[in-house]
Amino acid sequence: MNEQGEPQSRIVVGVDGSPASIEALRWAVDQARGRGARIEALIAWQYPVATGWSVPLPPVAYLADTSRKVLDAAVAEAVGADGLVGIRAVVVEGGAASCLLDAARGADLLVVGSRGHGGFTGALLGSVSQHCVQHAPCPVVVVRHARS
Image (cartoon, rainbow, N blue to C red):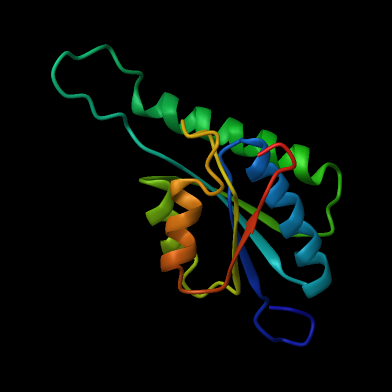
């Protein structure tokens, strides 16, 4: 709630530690300042699925902890010491696109980077950003990093 007792608007931002996602978080922070909104910065992780020949995989706790560290570093890089915007950092297990779409329910805006850490570096949009644009329950902003 804001000072007038009205619900505070919410901006959901997808973060994976890539330059585009950090740029998206910076953009969202600027928007949140102007709107008096709060930010929900979200990183999603999935336990790798292996078929056939299996290799040793790290424990689930390691994957969640690593995701938390990536998210915290991205928030620190994008926001710095600015405490003017409320940021809720969320780590969830699941596919990035589906977790972002779930988090975007009831949000005023969903912000994603144009490309994350996927393998198709020449693509204009990554698979997660494209899926969010096509299926989100709220407006979506795709932020392109200068070198993306």
